[in-house]
Length: 240
Image (cartoon, rainbow, N blue to C red; front, side, top):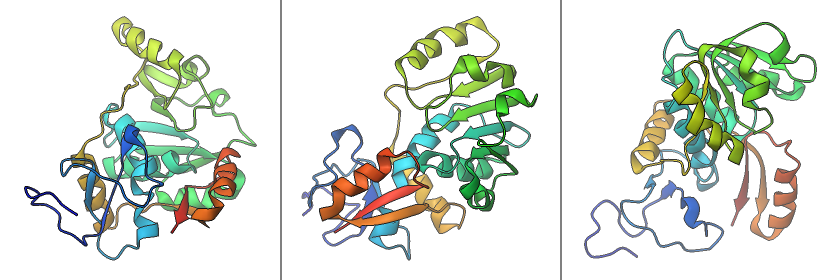
């Protein structure tokens, strides 16, 4: 159903997006404003393919927009094969950055295919000890820290975390000190325009959601347990 004043959508339209901190997306029906972070589905996509678009991509986009990524900027993405990481690699490629991606052995080729210029297998090499430095380090899985990554940042480098109260404090303090800093938005500023931007990238062939497994809704517990192993590749989708 749609309200009398709604102009963008009609009954029966196929849409995708995110409910954000309102949650509730496991429900059969969700009521959202026309101005919410939703858009018409990209042409040619199934519901299962469209469902995870915003999961990692909006988080990655929120972080990367802070870092002024452009041609010539060097970024390292840690956890490059997860939902946020696979999105981060593709978005960084779109922005023209030079990308080093860190993931496990089984996902090296996948991450290369998404646009990484080089990949590091974290089971064989510690990027914080190889002497390389970056303009941006994006920790897409919350496994590192500013302290551990500081030596791998350029003099005015940026550390982008995705969670952690300590990072919020560092984001308040480090930009005032000059030099290396933490940038962290709480709450993340995600907009309808961000969703429309992702749709444009998909329709231009410059972004694709990575789906690891699909579970029927009745197996939601098993799906959640798999996600909690922290070994998934990209996204896990529930089908109805």
